[in-house]
Length: 356
Ligand SMILES: Nc1ncnc2c1ncn2[C@@H]1O[C@H](COP(=O)(O)OP(=O)(O)O)[C@@H](O)[C@H]1O
Ligand SMILES: [Mg+2]
Image (cartoon, rainbow, N blue to C red; front, top):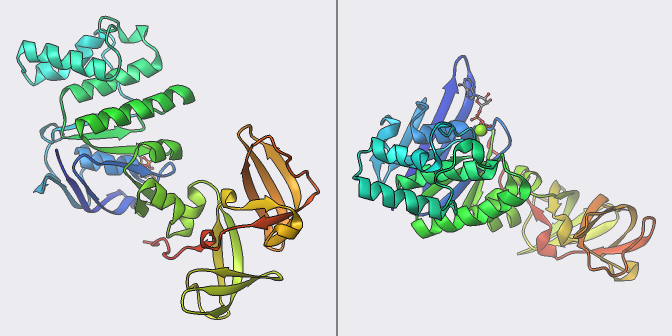
């Protein structure tokens, strides 16, 4: 299908709002990439520049190698679904979907076929004669997506298209839309602030902060081996442990935390440096005090149904531990426990977030 290249893309709004500082991204044909970040980090502005609705202050957008930076939006062959999509209220579902095809003057037989296809793809067959007011929020959102799919765009741009749906329907839509995108092989960019959405749907995630990409990789890469402190804390949860470097050998580092000595399998920091290490709460395991690498006392525990969350006071400060609920005996508040981990899971942030 189509490749998309974004080079040094930037947008400054007057007088001096640097909405997007510099974005570089190569999206392969058929790839699904999410721009994930909190509100105001520049996701929508980036997508709008790709779509052609906002003129960049600098940089380029290339579609299949061709510079389209200043091409009109309607000449880009991209399908865009905005957060606040608007269906025509006085038109039926089928009329809404066929509108774009009529504008493109497709032959009637082809229009009928495409409308039927698009509606069946989003599982709305049979509802073609309904009006938007007669649909649920989720169904309306699917009409908006069908309308865009019907024109068979080379690139699909989605700006928080599922944010109005309740959690269960959103989860179903993630699976449906991802399946559909794979079947059609449409190169796709999804803008979202929802980590689960980005994780479940994407081939790669670009974690954005302050108008730049802080971290780029597969969902597993950005979660398991992020290179920035920002990503450790932004994605999921993380414990921060401050440790002093005692010694190095070829492939590992010995560090002191409180009265404990720990090891990391990578070279970290310089001698006597204080370094910050990160470990996910679910990578810490609890045991009897004797069996643990360190000991600690349970300060609080929270029951979340599928998991227990523990806050444990120890030599490292307060550590959060997440344990799957197996209905077995769970440590109580006030109890002394052992805490252990795989050395490889205690990581440092190798790269720092560019403070551009
Ligand atoms: N038209 C505009 N004029 C001025 N500032 C804008 C405009 N659009 C967005 N911004 C600012 O640019 C920044 C990024 O906005 P946006 O791309 O919408 O972020 P996101 O989609 O990640 O929430 C924000 O600080 C926002 O206030
Ligand atoms: Mg936005």
